Image 1 (tube, rainbow, N blue to C red):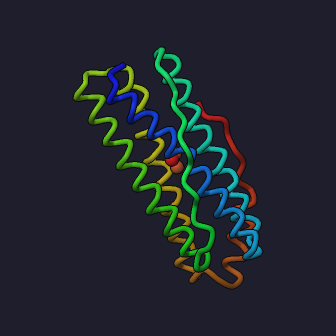
Image 2 (cartoon, helix red, strand yellow):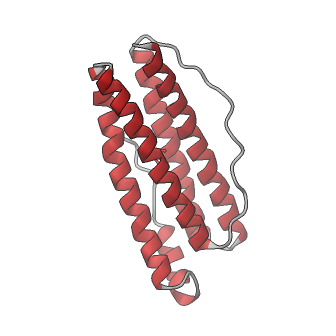
Length: 166
Ligand code: OFO
Protein backbone atom coordinates (compact mmCIF):
# COMPACT_ATOMS: atom_id res chain seq x y z
CA UNK A 1 0.00 0.00 0.00
CA UNK A 2 1.27 3.48 -0.83
CA UNK A 3 2.59 5.42 2.18
CA UNK A 4 0.22 8.38 1.63
CA UNK A 5 -2.87 6.11 1.55
CA UNK A 6 -1.72 4.26 4.68
CA UNK A 7 -1.16 7.53 6.50
CA UNK A 8 -4.71 8.67 5.70
CA UNK A 9 -6.20 5.32 6.74
CA UNK A 10 -4.38 5.52 10.08
CA UNK A 11 -5.60 9.09 10.49
CA UNK A 12 -9.18 7.97 9.77
CA UNK A 13 -8.81 5.15 12.32
CA UNK A 14 -7.94 7.81 14.91
CA UNK A 15 -10.90 9.94 13.78
CA UNK A 16 -13.28 7.00 14.25
CA UNK A 17 -11.93 6.48 17.78
CA UNK A 18 -12.36 10.20 18.44
CA UNK A 19 -15.97 9.91 17.17
CA UNK A 20 -16.53 7.07 19.66
CA UNK A 21 -15.06 9.22 22.44
CA UNK A 22 -17.18 12.23 21.46
CA UNK A 23 -20.38 10.17 21.52
CA UNK A 24 -19.46 8.64 24.86
CA UNK A 25 -18.98 12.17 26.20
CA UNK A 26 -22.41 13.09 24.85
CA UNK A 27 -23.87 9.96 26.53
CA UNK A 28 -22.43 11.15 29.85
CA UNK A 29 -23.81 14.67 29.36
CA UNK A 30 -27.27 13.34 28.45
CA UNK A 31 -27.38 11.34 31.70
CA UNK A 32 -26.95 14.65 33.56
CA UNK A 33 -29.99 15.95 31.64
CA UNK A 34 -32.11 12.92 32.73
CA UNK A 35 -32.31 11.76 29.11
CA UNK A 36 -31.32 8.12 29.59
CA UNK A 37 -32.94 7.07 26.29
CA UNK A 38 -30.84 9.53 24.29
CA UNK A 39 -27.85 8.50 26.36
CA UNK A 40 -28.50 4.90 25.30
CA UNK A 41 -28.61 6.06 21.66
CA UNK A 42 -25.18 7.67 22.11
CA UNK A 43 -23.76 4.56 23.80
CA UNK A 44 -24.82 2.52 20.76
CA UNK A 45 -23.20 5.20 18.58
CA UNK A 46 -20.03 4.80 20.67
CA UNK A 47 -20.03 1.05 19.91
CA UNK A 48 -20.65 1.67 16.20
CA UNK A 49 -17.73 4.06 15.94
CA UNK A 50 -15.43 1.56 17.62
CA UNK A 51 -16.59 -1.01 15.07
CA UNK A 52 -15.78 1.46 12.25
CA UNK A 53 -12.31 1.91 13.73
CA UNK A 54 -11.83 -1.87 13.91
CA UNK A 55 -12.92 -2.28 10.29
CA UNK A 56 -10.05 0.04 9.27
CA UNK A 57 -7.68 -1.62 11.77
CA UNK A 58 -8.33 -5.07 10.26
CA UNK A 59 -8.14 -3.76 6.70
CA UNK A 60 -4.71 -2.22 7.31
CA UNK A 61 -3.48 -5.49 8.86
CA UNK A 62 -4.96 -7.58 6.04
CA UNK A 63 -3.02 -5.47 3.53
CA UNK A 64 0.18 -6.30 5.39
CA UNK A 65 0.63 -2.70 6.52
CA UNK A 66 1.21 -1.20 9.95
CA UNK A 67 -1.45 0.27 12.24
CA UNK A 68 -0.11 3.34 14.04
CA UNK A 69 -2.18 4.57 16.95
CA UNK A 70 -1.85 8.15 18.13
CA UNK A 71 -3.46 10.03 21.03
CA UNK A 72 -7.17 10.75 20.92
CA UNK A 73 -8.25 14.38 21.31
CA UNK A 74 -10.23 15.32 24.44
CA UNK A 75 -13.89 15.65 23.47
CA UNK A 76 -16.28 18.47 24.40
CA UNK A 77 -18.11 17.73 27.67
CA UNK A 78 -20.88 20.35 27.87
CA UNK A 79 -23.68 21.30 25.48
CA UNK A 80 -26.56 23.69 25.53
CA UNK A 81 -29.37 21.10 25.59
CA UNK A 82 -30.47 18.23 23.37
CA UNK A 83 -30.85 20.23 20.12
CA UNK A 84 -27.32 21.57 20.49
CA UNK A 85 -26.09 17.97 20.93
CA UNK A 86 -27.75 16.69 17.77
CA UNK A 87 -26.68 19.72 15.72
CA UNK A 88 -23.14 18.86 16.80
CA UNK A 89 -23.62 15.19 15.83
CA UNK A 90 -24.85 16.20 12.36
CA UNK A 91 -21.94 18.61 11.84
CA UNK A 92 -19.52 15.93 13.02
CA UNK A 93 -20.94 13.25 10.70
CA UNK A 94 -20.79 15.70 7.76
CA UNK A 95 -17.11 16.27 8.52
CA UNK A 96 -16.57 12.47 8.63
CA UNK A 97 -18.24 12.17 5.23
CA UNK A 98 -15.85 14.79 3.82
CA UNK A 99 -12.90 12.99 5.35
CA UNK A 100 -13.95 9.61 3.86
CA UNK A 101 -14.53 11.25 0.47
CA UNK A 102 -11.04 12.76 0.55
CA UNK A 103 -9.41 9.38 1.21
CA UNK A 104 -11.61 7.83 -1.47
CA UNK A 105 -10.33 10.43 -3.98
CA UNK A 106 -6.74 9.71 -2.94
CA UNK A 107 -7.22 5.94 -3.30
CA UNK A 108 -8.72 6.48 -6.78
CA UNK A 109 -5.79 8.68 -7.76
CA UNK A 110 -3.33 6.04 -6.53
CA UNK A 111 -5.30 3.27 -8.32
CA UNK A 112 -5.59 1.45 -4.98
CA UNK A 113 -8.65 -0.62 -5.87
CA UNK A 114 -8.78 -2.60 -2.62
CA UNK A 115 -8.91 0.61 -0.56
CA UNK A 116 -11.55 2.08 -2.87
CA UNK A 117 -13.60 -1.08 -2.34
CA UNK A 118 -13.25 -0.92 1.47
CA UNK A 119 -14.11 2.77 1.55
CA UNK A 120 -17.25 2.17 -0.48
CA UNK A 121 -18.74 0.57 2.65
CA UNK A 122 -17.98 3.78 4.58
CA UNK A 123 -19.46 6.00 1.86
CA UNK A 124 -22.76 4.10 2.11
CA UNK A 125 -22.65 4.06 5.91
CA UNK A 126 -22.23 7.86 6.00
CA UNK A 127 -25.40 8.34 3.92
CA UNK A 128 -27.31 6.28 6.52
CA UNK A 129 -25.65 8.03 9.47
CA UNK A 130 -26.42 11.52 8.21
CA UNK A 131 -30.02 10.58 7.31
CA UNK A 132 -30.65 8.99 10.74
CA UNK A 133 -29.23 11.94 12.68
CA UNK A 134 -31.03 14.44 10.49
CA UNK A 135 -34.38 12.65 11.16
CA UNK A 136 -33.82 12.82 14.92
CA UNK A 137 -32.87 16.50 14.68
CA UNK A 138 -36.05 17.27 12.70
CA UNK A 139 -38.17 15.51 15.35
CA UNK A 140 -36.39 17.47 18.10
CA UNK A 141 -37.04 20.76 16.28
CA UNK A 142 -40.72 19.85 15.89
CA UNK A 143 -41.13 19.47 19.65
CA UNK A 144 -38.75 22.35 20.39
CA UNK A 145 -36.54 19.92 22.35
CA UNK A 146 -38.81 19.81 25.39
CA UNK A 147 -42.03 18.73 27.10
CA UNK A 148 -44.04 15.56 26.57
CA UNK A 149 -42.65 15.22 23.05
CA UNK A 150 -39.12 14.99 24.44
CA UNK A 151 -40.23 12.50 27.09
CA UNK A 152 -41.75 10.24 24.40
CA UNK A 153 -38.79 10.59 22.05
CA UNK A 154 -36.40 9.74 24.88
CA UNK A 155 -38.41 6.56 25.49
CA UNK A 156 -38.10 5.65 21.80
CA UNK A 157 -34.32 6.20 21.88
CA UNK A 158 -34.06 3.64 24.68
CA UNK A 159 -34.98 0.90 22.16
CA UNK A 160 -31.85 1.32 20.03
CA UNK A 161 -29.49 -1.67 20.17
CA UNK A 162 -26.05 -2.19 18.71
CA UNK A 163 -26.09 -4.38 15.59
CA UNK A 164 -22.73 -5.92 14.65
CA UNK A 165 -21.53 -4.53 11.32
CA UNK A 166 -21.71 -6.59 8.15
FE1 OFO B 1 -20.36 8.08 12.59
O1 OFO B 1 -19.43 7.15 11.23
FE2 OFO B 1 -17.83 6.51 11.78
O2 OFO B 1 -17.18 8.14 12.22
